[in-house]
Length: 517
Image (cartoon, rainbow, N blue to C red; front, side):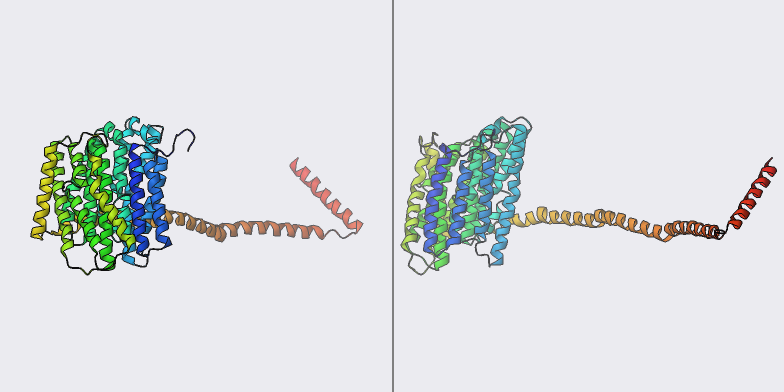
């Protein structure tokens, strides 16, 4: 704790749900990874990441939040690039890390503005900061949260993160890292309300991400890319809930989605690593995909509708409903994976048990969204029934048709990474190169010019001025030596010569006196 700042870790009604979710998913993922042969380095990195996430969730001030946030980012970089001998995976880790780190600068800025405007780093005090500091704090928090949760325009980093092992995605990209931004926005709802514009911005960012990344998920051919895009879209509902004030619905959706998505990533990991499938895996994946679609009575049907029930704007509600229908479409496309012929392979009990447990949780956690569980009234019955009917119909159509549009803009995630390279990275490098040239040619040139001028001046003085000065000094010395030599000649030691010299000098003085008179 910093004296006078009141920092510390707090477990409250919001953080306790996240801590339990983190612990359950972590145990399931580590058991799965152990059965897959991952060693000490992997487990150590995962545990360090989980500890950092726990600090992030329970931090009551921006200082501790940043500590957990930074360690979480560093561990995610190490886990995405876990296979460090593969250059492409390392490059993907670089892209994911640098993108989230660029957005994280917003949180550092928010901390600085909080010190200036609120004279406090406590999260509860941010909403009471003086203007314009409050708006600046909110802007920094929103940028950092959207970046960490892979919302537009930062979504592309999550596509790159799929280069990591499936157990990494099952924890980081379902129940931990990517939900940290949404969780922060849910916790700082009073700050969003205090500014006004921040709540509206967050609501539209979440709604548009849920819709547009849902289209991206529907177009994907690779299963992990589909799950990654769907993660962005589902977190969009949580961000929408934070902006619209449906905090309890957003929290319930976060928890249920964590169980469902970690289940789907682990099932995908079995198919990718073992090149086959198992009945338990197929059943678990089927339950997860149907829950992701929002089919009644599974978990995400309830929690998603509770989020939409808290949206007051008709325009936002329309976008959210369209995104909900899209979620059923891409979940239906994921279900098609079950119908592909695959060889039956043995799957260790240590992997089947976590999959079964997560399937049960993914199916039943919808109880969190029921009226009275987390405090909200819940959606209207007919609205939930309509949403469920649309989900069932959409899944049925996609499974029956088996073909969905795959436009290039969706396959390439709207070319967001290319846009970031063209609009941010390359101009940044160009500015850096220009500044380097300015430094080399102007700044360094000026310094080197002064040095060259000094050397030239010294050489000039040595060649011209010093020669004349030395010559004058030498002439004076020679004259002195000559006079001394003349003065030595009369010094013979003979007395009569001394008298003669004195007489001559006296005669000269008399002559001078006479002439002067």
